[in-house]
Image 1 (spheres, rainbow, N blue to C red):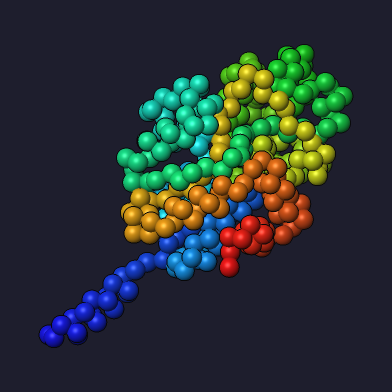
Image 2: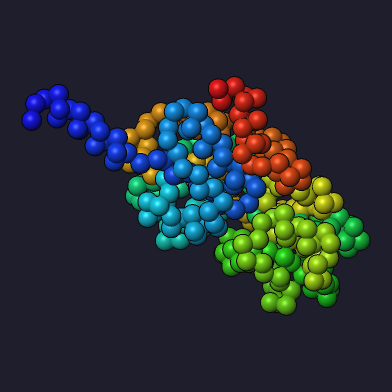
Length: 300
């Protein structure tokens, strides 16, 4: 075989073996927004990408990246408490933005996963109540809620299985503030997004008067809800960051700079506004992400 033919076959074979970078996200509007920001940024840089945004909850996304089914998706630093239970991350570390990011990065490196820089956003788990209900019962904190329940107050919370079952979500509020809900006080909606649970609370569906929420939801004010304050800082810091299989990053090192730059433009007010455009105005996550990235000069 002559050298020219050999090189031609080698290049052709390499191109055939090259796989698209699979971009995924969880189900909620913010996750899909961030997933689309990743996808559009990589595609704009000339990389071949496959869209698997809206894949599933944390457990589903985690299994997919560990198995190599997906290559990159937005994850939250506070989830290190849940993702690495054997590490026994203490509360002080989980509440420190730099501390929890460093731990997430450290523990996932062993799994062949690299955490890129997180956005300056904190999307904690939260409980949202109709404003009128909260005001009538003087509920503004989880301590107020605990006292209200001890007095025999009625509460029924709509949430996803993940919200109720994870030790760092609703159970953490129960442990920290000393209250426990019965199964009858929970409306568990499989695959529920915050929009769905908050709509249930706003409308009183099935007696619901409280809902799973995230700290950056754009629907809270639109539905006339309030989120309870967490004076004991029970919740870890949840900053969103792109996480990527290390082998994929090594093969495409420019990805790190591209995604760090895109996520570096986000702050709390901006992400709430973008989330509202999806959840309240009904725009697609891709359209919102595209318009935002273009406004920052990050898409051609």
